[in-house]
Amino acid sequence: MVAAAAHSGSMAKYALRDGNPAFSIIQMMDGTAERPFVYRQLLPTIAKIAQKTISESESFFYSAIKKVKLDASQNYTRATDANVEGYQYGYKIVYLASFLGLFLSLIMLRALLLSQGYGQVESVLAPTAFIIAFPYLQSIGGFFYDSIELAFFIGAIMLAYKGRIASLIVLTIFASFNKESFLFFIPTFYPFIRAKFTFKQTILIFISLLSVSTLIHFYLHELFKGNVGSEMYFHLWINLKEYLSPMTYLRNETTYGLPGPSGFFITTLTIMLIVAVRAKLEVSLVWKQHFLIAFLINMPLFLAFCVTGELRNLSMLYVGAVIFMAGALRASLKNSTCIR
Image 1 (cartoon, one colour):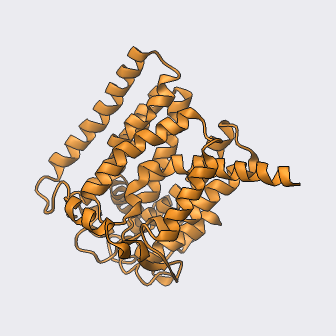
Image 2 (cartoon, rainbow, N blue to C red):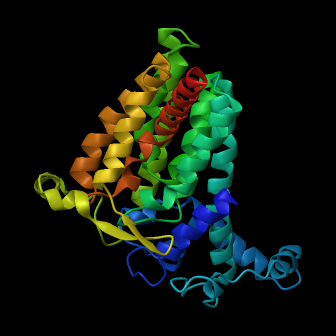
Image 3 (cartoon, rainbow, N blue to C red):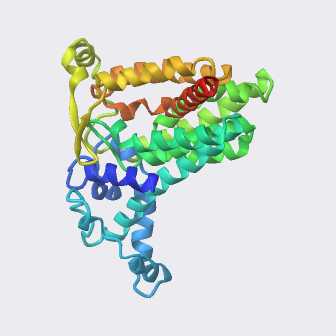
């Protein structure tokens, strides 16, 4: 229910970016979307394959998808491309995959927290609170690959923590096809991998991971080099001006059908600060190191290349944020126990 609620909140805000000539699901499936959006090809490629397979009326997949009776356009006014001929089955696959990303993220986050010694209460409540807040994190913009990105980040950290490098390399292939952010996320694994391997082994592992991810990006960049758009959009000077303006911290937008905070809203920043202060003694050094590395990589990229307040582009901090939320909950539970 939590995953379904969050997925519904995201679909109500953005759907699959239907009708947008720069990066709608149809343009992404066709490979005609603008750069850099067109590089996020994992789900569109799966959707294209599914569209061709399911379109055969005698196939098992055609019968199965028909029985689902899924029509996003009946529930979301923004889902205008849900039944476009030649794309309707691919649309359904991406729609379901976006939900699956959130669902798997919940399951994996709980498992991750339990493996780190957190109790059942915080291991359930922290992921629940984070996923419910996910549509708010998709402030100003949101895309169908955001939930899949989150699932890949969590899965990668779990594999790195366990030292399962072969599986991590395989995951890197798919995660890099999903979004180029995974390339920059790889260095945040250092505290986990270094705890399992020697320094030389760690360096070789990172060379392997970074090489695989870089090759995939070179391939995608070459494949779509003729598309309009740009490799990146520079927003640093605009951002510096906007973040100095008090009004930036009072913006709102509609989420879950009601007016709510947008971007770095003052209450959002306050909650972040409270969580960080409460959790500081409950989060292990290795997770603090991971979060610091992620912050040092993500924040400069965020300021330089992302639209003001677009929190979804701080995704490298997401997993660490859930750990801090669990730490804050554990601290609160300890305090309430002491009071009793």
